[in-house]
Image (cartoon, rainbow, N blue to C red; front, side, top):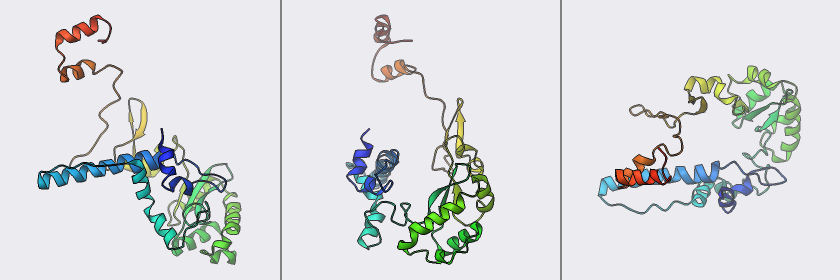
Length: 252
């Protein structure tokens, strides 16, 4: 529950959000990215080392450390003078007109990430933009004006119309899909990114392994489903279990 606090002390939270305020990026940066994935990486590295040497070691994994590590590139940008502390004024935080989300005429949104020159040129082609001002792609002072102009263009078509124009090209474009829409997207369907288990649509295991493929084993157990087995594993006898059932401390 303190995920936001952990990323707040790393600089990550300050860098994410609107011009007016920092915005929590769900708990993807601290809990999952900076915490769980770094811990999994640490454990696997520790196992490999233990197998090589026969020696174990302590793995010290903190969410704040992991979140700070994830910010390494942005600290590098800042050190090189190419990153400012003002949110939505930088290349990757929504400051650039060619790396942001835009609302369509139907109220839905699209994402555009046309950073490289060839992708940017294709963006201008597909949007029909001929304004010479857009040639100054990397002129930060021009970004606010170009963003407003691009927003006006995107607002002339629906999300599906922009998908028809851009989705199969190298514009670096994708529709912004909600949790109901994402599992139905052609890319996710083709890769079987989502699966349905016990009537619940959910992400499939990742990453994927060719020799030991993963799969969701089944729905979550009901409360108390494994109580008896767990207690037996901990050394409780059948008589102990019967006594617990008798006084109402154990069901089933």
